[in-house]
Image (cartoon, rainbow, N blue to C red; front, side, top):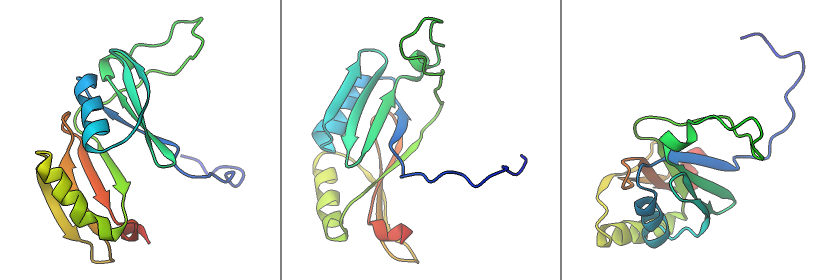
Length: 143
C-alpha cells in the first residue's frame, strides 16, 4: 500500500457495525428482549437493525447481502457478508456489569468469560443465538 498524498480527513467515530445471522427472527428476539436494543428497521429474510447508543447494530443474513444490487437499484449497496462468528462489544458503566451478568444468566445466556483487563476495566463475554462473540465492557478497557 502506498502512502496517501495528504492527511486523511477527520472521522467522528463508528456509526454502525454488522453481525451476520441466519435466523433473523431469533436475532431480533435476542437483541430486543434480552439485550434491550430497540429495533429500528427490518427487511424480512435480509436484515434487522437496532439502535445501540449513538451507533446502529446491523444484523444481516449473509446469503441475502452477497447478492449484488440490480443496475437500477435505488440503494446500490455493494455485496457483503461473512462466514463464522463475528464480534460486537457494547459499553456499560462499571457498576452495571454485575447486574448485566445476573440478567444474562437469568435469561439463560451462558457467560464465556468475565475478567478484569491488566490496563483496567472489566469485560463479560457471551454468544448471541447465531454464535457471534458478544462483549459488554467497562469503557476503561480502552482508556
